[in-house]
Length: 552
Image (cartoon, rainbow, N blue to C red; front, side, top):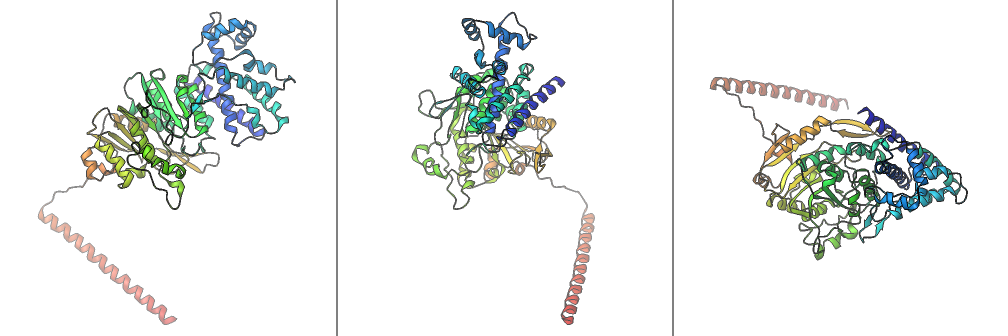
């Protein structure tokens, strides 16, 4: 554990150093900073993984062979031998030519023709081109989005470009991911969260919140408690992929294939990085940058309808302005998918259109007949009883697919005060006994950020385990977990709020008629005393008012 903490600390320091270089060169907190940081981080990771793979393949090397020895070997071998070497590599490893490696750039940072920043750009673009068939995501029109950009374009002052990339390469050469390749999901989830913590506030038009790992783990362990293989996972509003990655890890990265779509370019770039870090390169081609609602990209094999999936997870945007496409979505073409209707455009506050209602309908349409889903919703959805809200709930209950509901603590998301709950759906069985958990009182409030103005609720490990255990094992506990039925939910006008299904405990006290009369007499005396005191106070107030009136 101490070794893992040491690796985390060193990796976080690398990230801090890269951000410091950006600040010193005028792009700190700029819209382009996240591109520079995330792509340089990924470049370093791929470079080190390539070297690690050479060690694995070449029998002359072992785990303890110094990196310099491997780099010297690569510099000496002929092109044909180099090509044969790369052909033996795992598909999860990017192929990197000698002149694109970090060691080559480090050794050539003082060249003047071409200038160093041009060499750096050439390396990134060369790696992108050589690996475009595997290491790329797609637009909705299936156009491939390359792994890296030309990063020098983001340093607007031309005379700073060489010094910027020299500073970067000197930081990269002093760090190694070698010890991290044996680490698993928990390590990379921690590093990824640290990497993007300054960039998760602005994920585009539909992306709204970064999903905390605590919620992601709860969802994953409830959705997939048992061993399963060869399944498909889908998120129609994937963001940076936290929900997908947690579920993939729970199932086993080798046992599943991920599909996703998100309208935000930034979200898709972070998701791509997340997949590479977590050995899910085989799913990269299924990551689509586009509008899920208007142009859903994943279709079935004969393209006759939307694809359907074994597992769907989603933390969709709750409320945003989609007035530009509202009438299109309400058209005949989308009628089957958006069976419950499309929210109207409000006269004021267009940005409060409840877009999450469309994502819920899209998810219901995308579930296999044996599919399972978990959807993060604003807690207010649970008690809404009219219009689209009611029609969505009626469908869920009529098909007996509601497995359970968990109401989460307030401020579980650091950047929103919206209370959230999670709906768990399961079409593989008829859910006649529904789990209702109210975890809203759980967690500890902590300050987050340098200003310490943002309060966030953090669930402890024990609290997370209690939620999971209570849900999966249907453990009834007073004012925390109860079981209900579809009939009860119908009788309560389709309320999904857990608190409404808790037993109301009325204390019953047995007494004789004499004891009862005595108790009632005591209440009567108390009331008389209170009325007497009230009358006295009233008289004193009147006297005071009369006195004030006389003085005037």
